[in-house]
Length: 235
Image (cartoon, rainbow, N blue to C red; front, side, top):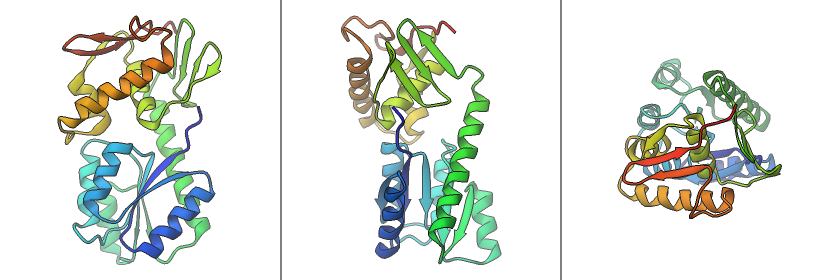
């Protein structure tokens, strides 16, 4: 599967935003751009990126608000890219929960190095938090450390959101996870009713990819009116 890491760029200066997006796509990342704070928050909850690049001086809100909002429900790495160079500004951003701070202007090599470092640190912390990084059941294997899903030895391509749903269920295999728990874990505490339909659509896509007969699932079961349960791992 080997998903390209997805990065949301929240930057209202078009020339800087275009430069960062080009740099990221050239080096194998999927880049999604937003020119305002509200648009950025929307993209974060809908695309569930691997990392966020954030300018503090946005037209509709201060970037600190975005950091605090995201930190209320997720540990997604956040790198601030800002013209604010005063020490107190950096301390405030770091204390609010950002992982790193780059002052404008900056070089391509520095940006890419900071991204790689933040992603490695986040992935390592996720791996340490999960004592059972491998899910296996019949013909299905999910390697959580490699973000790799295989069925009968063949890699299965999942979207970013589909993989996050599958990995959440795999980590809790054998347990019923309620719709609300899944929605708030994946999309955050501010998810609204529209996420119920998004969840159902994504689960239907996942079943078509993993199940021989989606109407008679072997791996992911619907507990009517309650939520979903993944068959218990055999490892």
